[in-house]
Image (tube, rainbow, N blue to C red):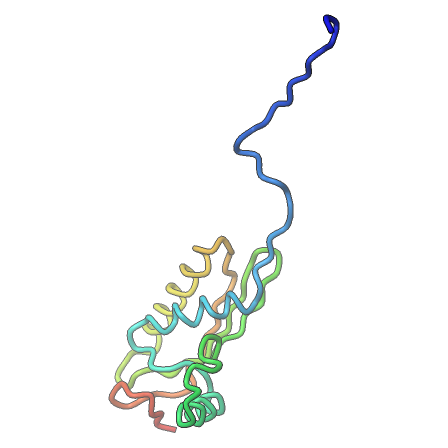
Amino acid sequence: MGDEATQELSVTPDAVPGGTTLVSDEVVEKIAVAAARSVPGVVELGGDVARFFNAVLDKVGLDQVGDARRGCSAHVTNGAAVVNLVIVIEAGRAVPQVTADVRAQVAGAVEAYGLRVDEVNIRVDDVALGGSAEPVA
């Protein structure tokens, strides 16, 4: 018993196993939609067809179906996101100001999740009179 060698293992309490983390496009879309909706002057997201189908779903009691990502597409590659939004703005709002605010809000929200935002592309699809979701079209 006297000649047995003891070996100690060094354990670092902050050790984290390696691996890969991937953030799906759908997650970025949900984050971007929530951020865009919070901007004053943004009344709705989605193009004419998406808003039409959403109105139908609202009438049959399925008002939350598809809302989380409607009006947004995103693509994530190597930790960088490209976000495309389709918005309806409130009548009387300056398009350049609203879109600049949307870009800043979306970029900040997505970057808070550890991604880089390369682009936030916005298409203003319609304008709503009186702040309602009823488009002028």
